[in-house]
Image (cartoon, rainbow over all chains, first blue to last red; front, side, top):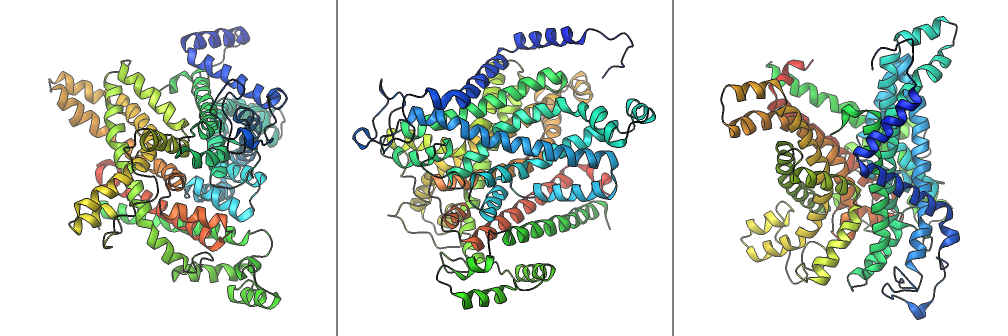
Length: 292
Length: 341
């Protein structure tokens, strides 16, 4: 960061120009924003727009390949794969967004406290995070869901728990380097409480790198949740969800019915891809130096 | 005591609190079962009295801290409880199935390193060329690919469409006999037995699942190799080496690559975390009889002792792998020895 000058530049226009510059330089980022809008649209409006009821079975049209009336074909119970894939967007996105939001909030609070006050609390929290990271994360999520009970909420909690260390570490580092900085001391001197300084003066500085982390993390959280439901945790059939649809479709792939597993898998991949691209793009906007 | 030896001992000592933490978490997980753990461990047919017996036998009537010591004591004796579904001690089951998982994981890692490291180096040397773009696409696609989905795609293409791959059911086609167990790795055991036919049969079964896992693993390794190679190539000592008139290959492999390799070795720790997790999914897709599919089977029938044993075993394996990585790091990099406290 450069030193602040008293005559502040018109940051709004500067940011906008920077954004346009970065997006023009990197059309892939623009594409990822477009895809993101598409997925949000599917999640919000999908259930009202799909041509068929995602749960309606009809054995007369079981396992039809993609055609004009069923774009993605039908599964073994005659359900329309396209409708199921689109409707599943809401559940998949909700799980991952809820999980990431939880770990964002909890990680921020714990990391900020540890970074600002330090001391024994910092040491204890660090040990706890070390221990969580000592597990292969997907395996720990399996163990947590198995122990807490096989429900969707517990998938959210498990995904949140395994992500907390990443956020907490990030916030801790960002807060720690600014704890003694001039603007924080000035804010203290003008009579703000520790909490106020921490929440309104120091923490906002950690937000840009956090946003990048959130975006990259969302993709990972979707993968994680879909993986858990693929092995039979959380989401129960017949509820449409990408992971479980791939799992059900896997039985038909060996007999050549590729569309049952392909489309939900493709959508899952596309969603993760979108979040990863967006994360990389955001990183370019937030911190051009870290481009790799 | 010599400096490297002290660094190694210090690093080994550092794993003690981590292992303790892992044991605490897995203890919490066994006690966090919904409802009464005694009811679960007594089984579905249990009546009031046998539940009470199980409660006393498991020590669940004791205060929590004493339960923890009982649990840790059992662990030290290698007692992870009995699996409900197989009726055997969980430790025996895990030991039986671990080689299958390790064979798969290690093969995948070898494939991933063999592709990712040259790719990353090339991408860094020819920055902006098609190799670089290919590397970028592979890296972003690789981390976005759900492993279970890649596996299914590969099965469809190579088993159903092309018919080159054997049916994705386990480690060995049923027409072959298991090689006599020495290491538990079929590839090695069949060679020890002097049975090339079984060796190739096992290899054919292994290729698809290992490739699936490798595709996923490749991305972080290639990314790290490229980044650290770029850093190394732009450093002063490379400029000096070039200015001193050393040949291109000497500069590249003798100086840049050796230095770039260190961060890559460090990332392997993170990669192991992903691989061990993805392993579970790949084992399910290919019906691979490793500890991952053992845990998935246990999940279906709510076999808690087996699941918790699996989670603990994976965590200890991961801690051990990280230790090995750090130790090799200490031995490779002479600077680390002085940094050790």
